[in-house]
Image (tube, rainbow, N blue to C red; front, side):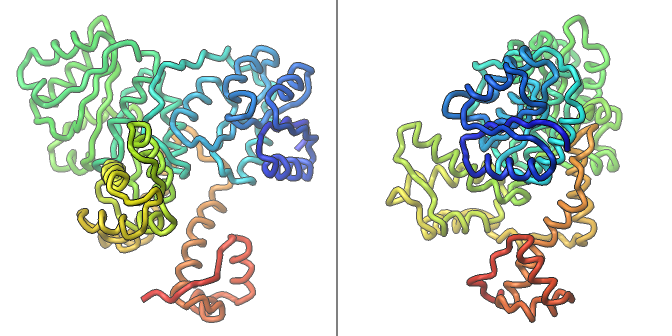
Length: 455
């Protein structure tokens, strides 16, 4: 890489790591913990790329983007943030950041994005749009996992288009929240948001009443698979002749719509009209790493409502991560709020979580889930979802290495558990050389202490 990179982050470790990595890659680096210093450098004409944190001691990095665009048109800004919420991703998109990465970020991935930013630094962006501060920011759409971050990027890209949107996923994953967020963060946010139920489409005049209520806002068909044939036909005609004030159409569904079409329960023309953009919301067991973040969010909300402060102990967190959560985020929220009210001390114990989860349905551990699906089919399904979440864009380069790492890490960890931490037995079980195993343990940062054999 060739160029000068300006790094702004209040974490000294991050500044050091980025400075060393970028310098080794051939870049010149100026690093600071102050937005004031960063903006002075930008004003002096320094830098070909900016890498900036959001929450800084002297301001908000996102709020600086319009000023940077005004002073230095075409200067790419890569935003990194520990605030792993949909609001951060959408605000970064609205402020026309070149790219956005959640913390903790993957250093090789950030280096590749920086290289691309250096190559495209001459690109002139459109004038930055104003970030609105009056929109809701308390949505439980939180997550640092790759699946959720990709979902946030898709939402940010499509929110101001007129494309119909189909949001799918299991019950309790937050489909309605995603649909509502797309409306509330879009240019239509001052217009009505009309939720349509089967009862609204029982007669011929139903579509006209719906359109009159929408007034060019957003119409959402909640659980579209539940509509009967007559109602589906009325929706198709309503979408084909929207009148003077054209609304945006969205739909949610927890049913497998392809199966519904195959069985004749869902009209193909309705599906294809609604699926301009398809967003599949992952289940909670597919993003276990987000459970502590969500639990912390719900406990903080409970505290703001006047309840005692609470936090999860390490044992409580471990148990919650191992639970299957068949009701997804909705079930997690209800359980966390209940535990927050009944806990005996500020730190919630493992036994208190166990008592709550013992009364919950389907309390199987995540690893115990399965429906007979072959491993190859399961991997293919998850990879397809990963590609779909990027819409018309390709995932970041280096996909092969990232996927292998995600598969290899749990494989080695489980094999180590199964062999009681005996590396010789583990290497034999995996069919690899012991030295190779040791290297992989080091490279993948796998902890091998205090492992016990799985029963």
